[in-house]
Length: 154
Figure 1 (cartoon, rainbow, N blue to C red):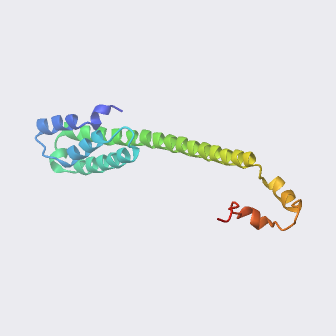
Figure 2 (cartoon, rainbow, N blue to C red):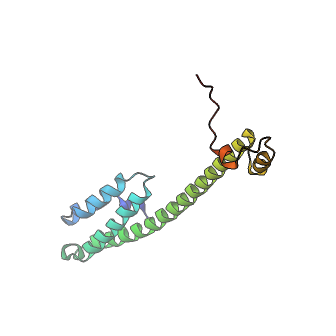
Figure 3 (cartoon, one colour):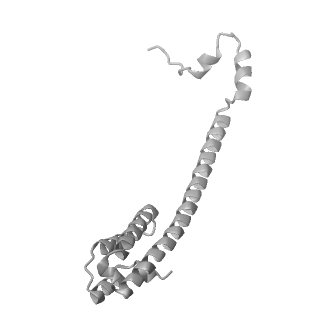
């Protein structure tokens, strides 16, 4: 695939030489060039638009009568298809990397929460023995969970 087929300047040259008036493909190519390298969704959308517009132009009498323009449009369609596949692979890899990062962040958050509970000294292992061993046995498990700090009466 030659990347020059997906540029606005290449199609402008063909249009000028063949005296073809077309703005739809020029707009689609300009939008594709304007899409950021990190905007994979935008690239996919624009590549789909380029393919559709180029297919439609191939059926145009004005374009079909010019062999150079017809050949160029075939190359544009092929370049759009191959670039679309490459972008899909890149998007899939980016999605996998994002999922792995998200999973790692969740694991770290879970570990941090587990560490904090151990530092406070209250875990599921030692919660019930604390309740059983309370001297007055007036402390219930629910009162331990929802207890408020002791405040002296003023």
